[in-house]
Length: 350
Image 1: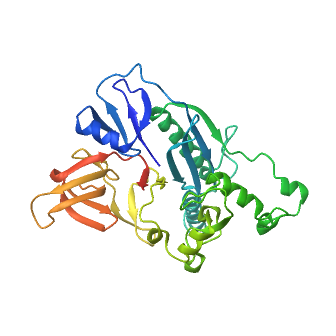
Image 2 (image 1 turned 90 degrees about the vertical axis):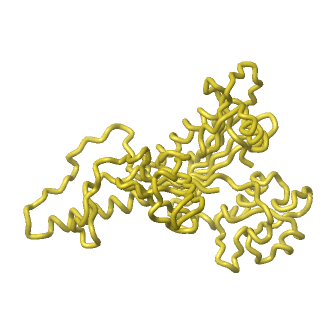
Image 3 (image 1 turned 30 degrees about the vertical axis):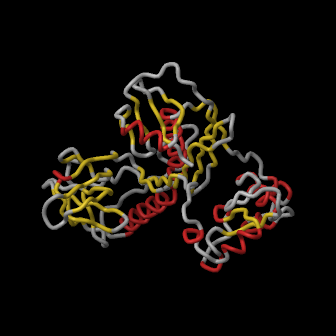
């Protein structure tokens, strides 16, 4: 689904291209890798006369996840898709933990620490930190995509009125999902999302069934993100199989982006009782690397010969740790490492 973003030598975004074209340009040394996530190449020549297609950025914001897609307005083709996971609940939990810790300090027989209550001014339009982070994440990625693709328009799903609350002022909880149109909106949404065709074989103009991507028999939920459309033949054929086993290849996977923040401002680390047990180094960068960078290590000597790609944790001694899906690899010299993506507060998966 996702194509490769292209910039010319003047950093002007051009039409995204197929990955095979990008590989050919890189092989012929007509382009270089500009960014790893999302994958972007930069041409070594200017292209002022290139035809630019009109792309539309579509955003579907949510409390935990926000969906983003770049769509060609003229053809309806999806050229890029991503799912952004917010850290609002993590921020809420961190603030709750800090609040509880301060309350416990005030309860001890020590110097009294006056609580801060309504003694700070809030600017107009103030949002809670957990909500503000969600807004900032979306704004950050909109700005990034504007730099990488010729986006001409932005569409966002907005809900201005709570029609069910207007009809029933006492509605709450699960009653929202059990309205007069329960199930109807889901089917219409899936028909629009999957282009009124089977998600597995692409057949059209046949009766469709709402199908669980991750089977209910194996713990799948009724969440809209776990539902799709399929014809009766494909639904029967899939049964309770895992989606990875049923589909040999899945080319429609979006880029999964997780907001991680930029670390902590604590001057020391603490144990489970809250007592400091080690200091935090003042310098963040050693040998050109920073903890959180994505690096590729090609080890040619020693006990750990091989190639490793993952997030790096640095030490001032130059002995780094690399963590990837296979686990933690310790004691990799910085001499074998090459940074392929600088830390930007997000982690990526396909």
